[in-house]
Image (cartoon, rainbow, N blue to C red; front, side):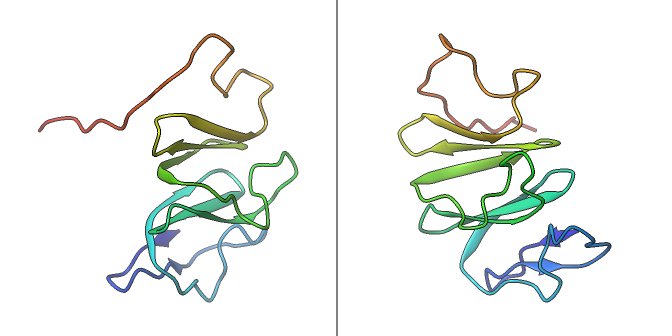
Length: 115
């Protein structure tokens, strides 16, 4: 389990057998978190991404992902991130077409449903 306290760090707790969440938490300036089956990652205020956990399918690069990202999402064994320019970055397993196929291009945008 992951949460972002008011100080922008990441708090972690629960079973962590694959190091998908650093047990002591992570200091930093984070604005979003996402968790897949055996990996997690977080978006920093500067638009870069930090990753943890199982990287068997390339879903959590240990050096993180540089870029100018504004939103993130995690799947079972893959990860997605939306860049500021509306393009999408995908990494991890793509056996079932989790990444946008050729011909599906952006720019994409984040939307919020109205309550």
